[in-house]
Amino acid sequence: MTLIGLDVGGTTMKAALAGGEGQVLASESRPTDRNDPVGGVLDFAAHLAARAASLGSPARAAGIALLGTVDEATGTAVHSANVGWRNVPMRRLARERLGIPVAIGHDVRTGGLAEAVLGAGRGAGDFVFVAIGTGIAAALVLNGAPYPGTVGWSGEIGHVVVRPGGEPCACGNRGCVETYASAASISRRHGEGVPAEEVIARAGRGEEKAGRVWSEALDCLADGLAVTTLLMDPGLVVVGGGLARAGDTLLAPLESRLADRLKFRDPPRVLRTRLDDQAAVKGATILAQRALDAG
Image (cartoon, rainbow, N blue to C red; front, side, top):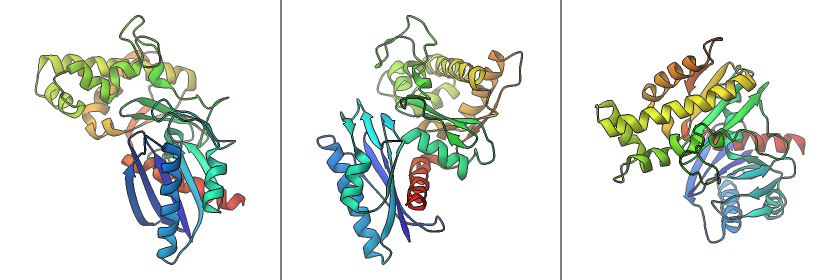
């Protein structure tokens, strides 16, 4: 038995074929088709199904993690500014194309599911999985299951306003966490085309401008996580996304700043993801297994 797990990002789609015991039989990636994103997703899924058949183990179900606003209950890709789709019945289209059960999930919530089942959040119950990359979003995991919210907008920690009247955000507001603490924003605020990883490295070497940018990013991220902690009371924050590769350079000062903002209570632990950039792919295979079990 083979399951398809597919993670659709704004620039890249990552996928895996998993066996019944969860072992990875094959993995692939390809660029997201910005001209025909829906067709690109369906074509990649069909290619994966064909590859599974060529390996002698036809795909039995598929899980697809999507960016943007997602209604998991109806399997609808509600909206994504990055790829431009709106109200796409992705589950129905994928089921028609593949002829197997299909589950649809939000990319960050699907990553949070994988962390709950397989990763750093295993056994934690209630925790926050925050993905810090080009943007910032979180999965609010309650009793081991990501909470989607009423219309699929839960976990938008990147758009918590922490600097009122501050720098403009793509969401239309000003002073959002994402405007200061995402990898893209760290690079932009430093300037000179320096990527976020290098800004962090320069800050560690004592460069004044890099140090200011990095310190502000940590402060804003801690502000957003403090609000989330006070509302949700999680025991754990799991940090994923590209910026998590900074390791203790990110985690140690973030944990310290979070504690400073929660003086009357203990802060949650802050851990790095155990699944790296494969969290959403692994979560998508979990969704596929659940779709198969549900028939």
